[in-house]
Length: 65
Length: 347
Image 1 (cartoon, each protein chain N blue to C red):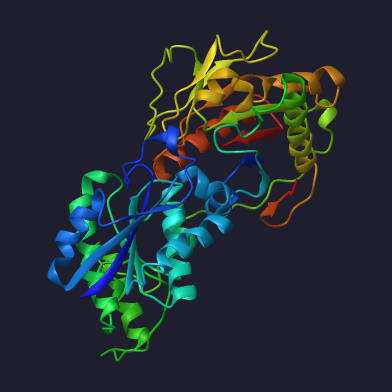
Image 2 (image 1 turned 30 degrees about the vertical axis):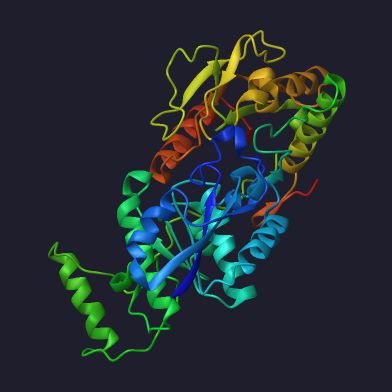
């Protein structure tokens, strides 16, 4: 599965499980938050990615946050 | 005199590089950067009255509001033609140019033209709706690209009837027009087959799309026993880039060990990707390759284990051909090592 910010590119090139990321320079980060809060944001995205991997999909799917 | 507005990103608009990729749309009078060559190619029939510039990240991260802001700026100059780019093979700039051209046509009713390398994701996304001149992959092809865009733009502004995409130099839009042919379809197909059998050149009348579609993989049945791998195109490498991964147009991917690593530290890893500001990734590479979070999942038993290596490359102007090859080779290793799930992170 792919975590990326520009989901339209992931769709164009054929990715099937797509999770929108935080931002281009820090897809799994949030530099304005404290380190602990930021890690929680990252963990949430990773948990969503793991959930997407366990989901049955029969076509290209964007898993919305 | 045809009034022309030119759209550029922050780089070609001479505001700055990746550190300025977040700048909001702004307008300046007269041509800037490639706009000089555009004005020269347009000659005396048209004048570039303004340049609208927007940062690559600003546009890519908020495409809808960015399009609206850009359109408002463009509208204020009352153009009769809008030219965007060329974007060559730039992966954020291309979709932005495509979105601007599409909105200019539909919202302002004004003709628009851009230019891209056929593999640019923006071409795949927008070619059916816009006029996109085929360019080379890099700005080395600027002169030819701008000149072709000017010729096509002037024709569009004059309302001329265009010839085929091949004749006019723009990417096919998937539009079929009825024309008279000397031979029937059956005879033409037989001619093509005969040419193919004899090894002679022939041209299909229905080209197949170039992006591959793959069937979605089955879901992972039990993550708690699965090996999960991390792959990135965000250019994360050991500090100092010992194997010299390219910052753009990557010719290779690399594999590094994650054994004993609980958390990616900026002291030991960095990003060499030349297509985004690396400040945040260099401070904490977990922001691109989330090793710390996956180690937690591993400890909690949520996943079986994190695969002991990660794969990395730079997805910045990388050709489709190379990207496909990297993907196939990485997948072979992952399958051989019993990996059941992969998280690919992209910047």
